[in-house]
Length: 96
Image (cartoon, rainbow, N blue to C red):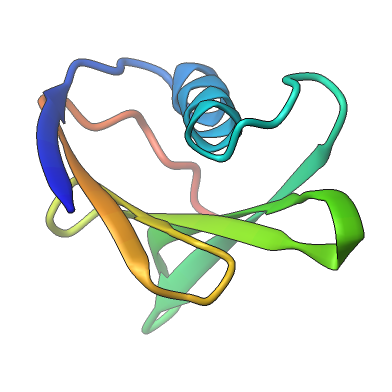
């Protein structure tokens, strides 16, 4: 498992980074597979974003951005954590 620091300023840049990182790490062609996201809440307040890329043969690869720790956690198709990225700055997360 690796840990790195990232400087991502917008939610759009975060989405793009997560998508490209998952594709690269799993040798998937970018632009082919769909990725969804869901805002996570705790006590009615946003606390993160759950990203899920739907790969070939029903494979699901995921990442979670934790706003409390301002980190990105990447998981493989078995649900095991593969890497952690620390964000230098936190993008704005809209309140639902």
